[in-house]
Length: 377
Image (cartoon, rainbow, N blue to C red; front, side):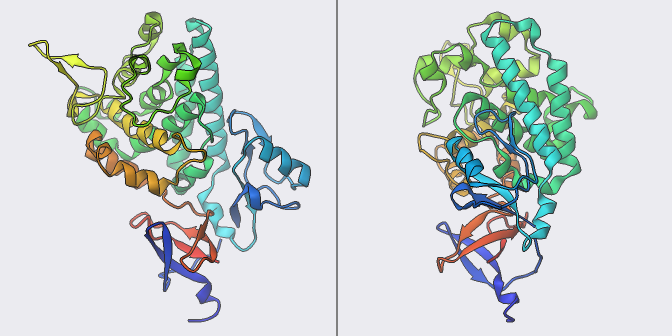
């Protein structure tokens, strides 16, 4: 193996570590995702940086040359990583899409507006047409630039706030919906094929799935309960918003997501329904709206990742949990498979530690084997 070739390895995951093998391919890549602790002055920002708690607020434009003051401000705002220019990795650029980041920020702004309107009881200001148009723009960017999907983990708004949670759930749900277009046609037989696979309503439902939390006490609203079948009746009541006018103002598919996103495929979950004998039971399987089944998977992923721990769990750890009991019983198998297909375990541009303790950078994502990326050190 040549000295140049020796810098490239193909990896597999084993208990959270990478083990080197001979590479199947060599590529070369120009932006790098760097943890904020390793960012230094004179680095040049490669992608726009948005505020972690206000993901519609731009902090730094691409092309900005960092200085110590700017880095200190980023740390104070709890920015976790930055994308910086790095000549040795010029083809990672194909995985990133600034227009997609802008579309996500625009959606974040609409979520903020919607939450403010709901909390202020200004339901007449909820412009679902505008929200749907923004979601359509996000979908257009996702479909026109599919490679950027595998960097979605680094483009998420960080933090445990309700707004950021809803933004991440909407983003993941739309990705899964795009992957499941044929399944949506099958699951929505009363609609034409074109209408059945439209995922704008899914994005809107995911965006507002936790709208009922806005009318709960702050300490309940901002909690990230684990397990997700939290028995607290007050917390569970968020699927039945106290504001009936709000519920009636939502489109029917959005109401289905709000009502059913904690119903589980195996019949567990809440709210409880009752059979003809008056015995409590839950909705089960395909009786749950397919959009709610999608949001259930996205919501569980995000709640597990941003749980009670100080830092978000790695994607691979969350996916492993979701594949075990009790969570694995909660999901429509087809929907869960779609999440595995779109969720990047290791995003190109992210830094990893090899089994020999050497630091490396993920440079190639393999969709057919996501736990075996190619890396370069």
